[in-house]
Image (tube, rainbow, N blue to C red):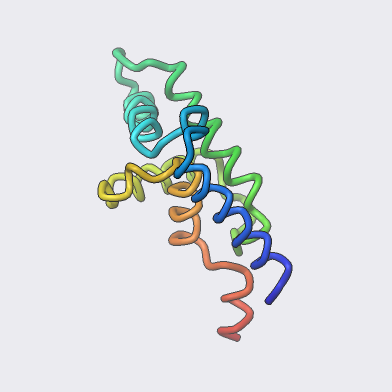
Length: 125
């Protein structure tokens, strides 16, 4: 098993275990992320009722998770923060059954769906 795959599994186990403890109160749930995402989407539409603080929090959280796991994905150069935000927003809207999961887990799932894992791409060659 590659080093990247091992790190990814450890990261997921930590996230999943935190969801089972009271420490989750300090983490963000998918439901929390969806609430922020709605403000992010409103900002994208130039809606005057947007809570821009929530929209920035969504973008910051999503980009933070993306930056910390970017080494796992075969992400093309030039992908913008706006595109990453839109990818996660699209995933959240398509998977409401997952909203009770930790927010970071949902961001990772969205990125895995949009971009192949580096190891998977090597196997396909």
